[in-house]
Amino acid sequence: MATAKFEVLSNSINAPIYLRLSIKRGLTPRAKTGLIIDSKNWSKETKLPKQTTGANKNLKTNLIKLQVYILEKYNVAYQNNINIDKQWLEHYIDVYFERIDENKTQTKVTYWINYIIKNSHLMPNSKGGYGLSKNRIKTYNSLLNRFTDYQSNKTINIKDLNKNAFNDFKKWLFEKEDYSPSTATKFLTDLQKVVRVASEYTPTAENFNSIKFKKVQTYDDDMNVITLTEQELNRIQNLDIKSEALLNARKYLILACYTGQRGEALLSRVIKENFIKYGNDYIIRIKQKKVNQTITIPVAPQVKTIYETGLPYKISIQKLNKHIKTICKDAEINELVMGKKRNKETNRNEKKLRPKYEYISSHTGRRTFATLHYTKIPTPLIMKVTGHKKESTFLEYINQNQDDHVDILLDYYKTKELKERKETVLNIVNNASNQN
Image (cartoon, rainbow, N blue to C red; front, side, top):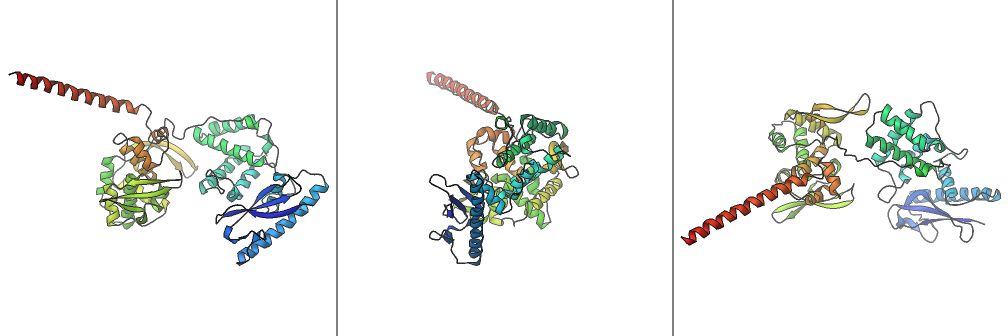
């Protein structure tokens, strides 16, 4: 006789609720239900939510219904000698919550891409937790659109995705859709993840696990890094602006160029509460979400002026980028440069020569910060502000190569040599004077 009990194994406010099915000694599969609870609201005695709120009462009711449902499915499986394990338990939990269809085994690739999108809150993420970011969900939506176009009127199943099928999709992305190597590789690796998720429920191709793709750097050799020069920054700072919205956006652009922060961090973390007095100066201490680390930013004079005269009010990143382009256009930042910009009609990035202001955004400030300080102060110190962990990644980010240190060191050697020659000449002159 099997029993089904719920467990909460975390002390967090968003603790996952597990279901453990005890069948016999050594056979106790456990799976997440996809439901969460504040661990303070969980009763260790009843193994159910405390009945302190209406939400907890509804949660208890739902869990009891799930418990009954799983035991009913267990009885059917037991009578039909069906293997019962963690995958079986996960499957019927998903069926109960209508995440998948019980009546047939779903094998379509597009079904499983959709499955990840609809159950994004349950998917493991890169930080070791659960729940995909908005950007990750967006990438899976893009994959769904591209793969739907690729299969056209055909129906491609998970088991069809063998090495040849992946290579065919790769060829289509490169030759038919003209995607860059990094974008095409991202589609391919995301499709691999879809197959791995589906593999718990449906068979995959025999050679699937041998499929590998060469890692492509996002910042490839022909990438055009758009930054602002010191002269352009001066033009922007001296520009006569009447509009309050543009004045506000200019503050953000200057802050970005002298703090090296991304758009999201710029808007939500370069705030009054994060400025800390440091002797006669200030520092900014913030936690970067993307790299999950706390950084300390010395406050430059330009940032100090904005802090003391009034930090900008918060706006959306979309409005900020629009205003920044207007400011740079008015400041005549119109040198023709090569870059990529999305074509609204085709919804694709197109690379071509355009006036520089068309490529300027809040992220330009971050690259500008890195570029302005590169060679002037040690690279590891710049990386402490930008949050880059590897110097190779940092150099790619600002479109520099591993040999840039050569010129710097040669200049150093020449300066040192000239200094030594000067000292030698002075010694000779001094010795001659002493002899006289």
